[in-house]
Image (cartoon, rainbow, N blue to C red; front, side, top):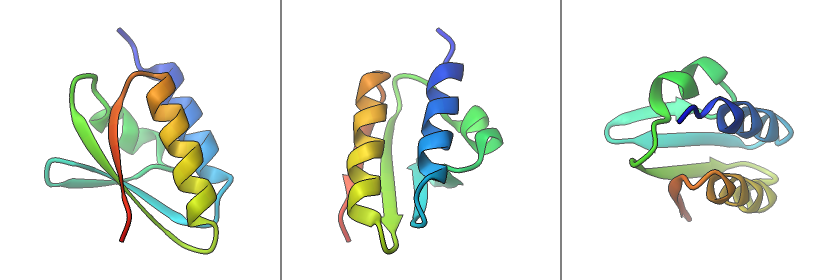
Length: 80
């Protein structure tokens, strides 16, 4: 299964927010606004953590959680 659609949708959605949106996979941290970073990291079956900081963090968290769920990607949004 290709995650290309998910990767494009995730990075485009993330780019709409001013907040920093970082995906943690194991011990790697990837800027979700970077398509290249997502390509090398986002594989099905992994559990990811999403860290969001910034002025529109709440909206960003909700939107990202929605997109990850839509593509059946296992994500935990971390609330600091």
